[in-house]
Image (cartoon, rainbow, N blue to C red; front, side, top):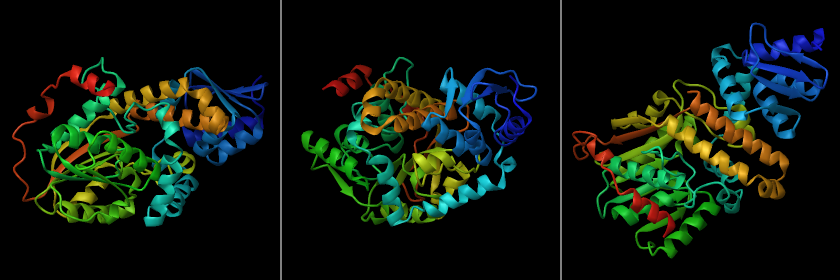
Amino acid sequence: MRAPSLDRRLLETVFRAAGPAPVRVVLGDRVWFTPRGVSAQFTIRVRDRATLLALVRDPEIGFGDAYADGRIVVEGDLVQFLEAAYHTWPDDGNRRWMARAISRWFELWQNNSLRGSKRNIQHHYDLGNDFYSLWLDRQMIYTCAYFSSPEMTLEDAQIAKMDHVCRKLRLQPEESVVEAGCGWGALALHMARNYGARVKAFNISREQIEFARRRARDEGLNGRVEFIEDDYRNIHGRFDAFVSVGMLEHVGRTHYEAFGDVIHRAIGNSGRGLLHFIGRSRPDHFSRWIRKRIFPGAHAPSLGESMRVLERHAYDVLDVENLRLHYARTCSEWLARFEKAGEPIAARYGEWFRRAWRLYLAGSVAGFSADSLQLFQVLFAGPRARPPAWTRDHLYTSRDLEWARQSTTS
């Protein structure tokens, strides 16, 4: 049955705001609608007109909340549907003023001040180590892996990522490193264990810091790695290198210059550093639904925006690499593991939580696959740092893959 005129007008409003995705919308059990001139590849079932009205008000938040509630059902592959939707999603300039206003309001409400950052981080990272251990790799690395060969497991690729970072920094034994936002501590431990560095790692997630400290004790690395439960703004001391993997997304655009001041305080004009972060090809607002439900305070900057961190102190940008497709595969691995652990996750956190996180992970796979999101690694150095490498050959000196595999099982 075709949609009555009121429902048709509402659906046309939704597709004008969200773009003409190749979908057939079924409202309740009686009406259906497909955007004009589009061949439907997917079917979305919308429970009722109230859900449809929520989509009219804000297609992104309305869809995310309705999917988590079970009021919207996507028939078929969720990742493929989201990827198709990203391809037809309109540019920011064509979105309604209300969506832009909501994005600006989120940036104010979730400001990453000292107090705001702690609240935002606790919302996401302090869900419990038991939760993340169900679908991350053994070392609990929650950032983009580096699949230097197609047959790599996620575990191998995460080790390859840490080696890739350390090679870019050209770490030497006994050099001092400060890490801002260290997660569960894998990179700091890797730098100390495999490169002989001395590391101070800062994080405001208590769950993560306690896990990292236990690992350091168990591995006998307490003398080389210090895990500090504190905000990056309180980093003090001088270091040879600064590293931040997956943390710039939580700094907030209004704090980039202050972040650059922290880096300069840590490495001055003679050190070097690396920023690894989710970004975009041009400035845009971050997903309102993800900011509301999953990652408060998050922002994915363009390369131009991220340069505000470095330009203030005239740091030299030595290397920029985009690992977008590596993150698409990383998120795909996480999603598969998450789905396998779906029942215990739902039993502990509820079905709404499981569906919301499934949408978040599936949307991440689709975002990186569809070129909506990027993953940048930016290597930089002070004007008085030691000369940079003449070529990039040192990045691709192969290590024994068998060693990598053994290190994950030892």
